[in-house]
Structure formats: structure tokens, C-alpha cells
Length: 467
Ligand code: PMP
Picture (cartoon, rainbow, N blue to C red):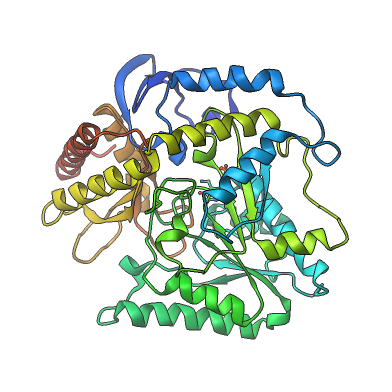
């Protein structure tokens, strides 16, 4: 029997569960009247928690920031905390990448602002016709209407009449080697196919009308984590330069330390060539680590300069933009993460977790089709048949069902059914994105509980006891 819930989210999800507390990587949850202790939080909500739960320093940071926080409307009077956080992000990114930051409250809001900043940039540059956004045909950038317009999400099909005109939101093929790299096609050939498709789209749409290309560096909600092939992002960067188009990387889920190879912040440092940067980047989630609600848009020097020398119209001031308290607390959280080398820790331990899961499912467990990811962000995709990669019947709702099995084993992961944008029969998967404080013992426990969960679910399928 489910508890009654009055919160819309739980009403929609139809299965209320409430978190009672947490410490480090473990949480306590009440579900259907039963209390589950010592659940390993292997996904930190939605890849949010960088610091472990119940970090006592955060309370001290809040107490330190509060007396220096007085709310002012940021377009009239700014605050030092938002300046300090912007400086921190810029200084902890490769030199020359970013010059300015806008802080807001959610990833969707960040992408809304990024679209408007992009449009404003082209107005400042005297190119008002640039008003098309090219994103990927399976992508997720948020559930607000602008962000949804550049996403591709089958569940939003009935909403297209209230989105940005879809003629302006052009979709390029998604990059997903596990399903779409053809047999006999090399990684280079597949990459070239994707880049050629993008170039053709830019040309067919008239480069003079294309404003930006938008890509999740490492997708999460749309496909599960798909590390891009080597030349893919560098190739997109080059095409953007060739046709005078902005490159917008969405790192809301994968960024801010979750998957950085150098102990830094940005996921693209794994993939872009030295000296290549995005022009505009959205971030969120781990920035406030679930303690404060904060997300942001980072822009490179040329965008900052265009605004400084331009009309000054900023279509992006919300009441809580650059919120001083949120920025001050997020900064201290990020400083602690850097001081304690936690971005290095999650990159190393996350890769270890991925390696152990890959090994555990290498040639057994027919329902595990693919294990993919990098650093602290991983996906396990489930299929009916490992060899043919045939997906499960949608009605079985495998992603969500297996999530429940894992939960009973004391493992919190996020299950997805057929990917958010189930256009072409993509598989069910679960996401793993643990806290940056994860230890090797936690990795072993996650892998153990995960393997047990898969075994149990396989047995349920075999016994025909699926519910
Ligand atoms: N962009 C990406 C890549 C995301 O994964 C998400 C959330 N999962 C968003 C944007 C939207 O962020 P929010 O839920 O904070 O609005």
C-alpha cells in the first residue's frame, strides 16, 4: 500500500518514497511505511551530490555566508558571492575558456538563458537572422519549454504546439556507437558520418541562420552516458568555427567535477583538443551538490566582449539570478572539493566502478547489453538479448522495475525506460553517479549489490514472475 502524498512530483510518480537522512554515500529512506537504512546512494539523486550527504562543513558554510547575504536584484546591485563563484569557475577551467558566468537555479533555466544569450550575441554581432539551434535527435536539456524545444523527448510530442517553432530547432543524428555504429564501420568512419551529417544540416539550413550547435558532452537522461568517439567533439568545434556558429555544451549533468581527468571541473577536457573550448556552457547539479539550488551559464571571452561593447540588453535577469547565499555556499563546497582532491577521487573510483561492472558482466548475464561511461558517470543498459541487442518490451518497464529490485538490495540508482526520447526502440538503462567521497570499499559494495540485483531480476524473468 502506498502512502498518500500531497506533493505533485510524488503524485505523478505514483510511488512516494521519502528520504529521512544521509551520511557520506548512505541514505535512509521510508518507502510504503518501511524504513530502509544504509542504502548506498549510487546516483546521488540525479547525479547531483558531489560532497557526501550530511557534510557538517556545509552547515558552517551556510552560517558563514548568511550574515553577509542581503538580497538585491542582480541587474541593479550585484553581490560579491556571485563574483567570487564566477572567478573560481573561470580560474579552475583551462586558461581562456571562460570569461563570465550567469548563475541561476536549475539546469533548465540555465539552458533557457543560454539560448537567449546566444540570440543576443548574434544581435550584438549584427547578425539578427541567426536564430536556429541545432541539437541532437535524442537529447535532454530540461523540461521548461525552451529547453524542451531543443531536446528530443517522445513524451513531449503532444506539446510541440507550445514549443519554439520546430523549424528553428533542427535535429542532427545523435552519437551512440553501441546502437548506431554499423557493423564493419570503424570509429573514425562513424565519427565522419556524424560530422558530415552536421555539416550538411548547417549548409542546408543556411549557415547565416544557424545560431548554435548544442550537445551534452556526456549525455545522461537521454541515452545514458555515451562517451563520444575521439574526433567527434573536436570535429564539431571545427565545423562551428568554419560556419561561424556558437558551440554550446550542456554539462548540467556530467560537468562540475563529475568526470574531469585533470582534477578540474569540465567534462569536455576529456575530449576537446588543447586550445579548443565551447563558446557557451551550461552547468548545474554538482555545483551546489544538492545543498543549495544553483546552476549556471559560462561564456567565453568573445561573448563577454560582445555584451560589454553591445546594447546592454540582457534578456536574462531573474529575481534569483546570481543569488548571493546560493553562490557563497556553492563556492565553499567547490573549494572543499578541490582542497580534498575529490574530483580526482571520483574520476579514479568512478572508473574503477565502471571497470568492475564491465568485468562482472563481460560474458555472463544476458540482460546486460552495455556498460559505458567515464569518471563518476556510468550507465548499464539492459536488453532482451546481449548478442542481438534486442530491447525489452516497453510494457515490462524494465528500467523502473530493476531500479526497484536494486533498491530492495540497498542500492539507489536511477532507472530509465527505453531512454527519455524513445524514438527508435532504445534500451532500458540505469544511471550510476555516486558522490565524489566514494571509497574503494563503497565501489565494491555497489558492484556486489548491483550484480546481486541483476541476478535476481534475471531469475524473475526466467520464472515468468514479472509484475
Ligand atoms: N541538461 C541536462 C544535460 C540534464 O541532464 C538536465 C537534468 N537531468 C537538465 C539539463 C535540466 O536540469 P534541471 O533538472 O536542473 O532543470
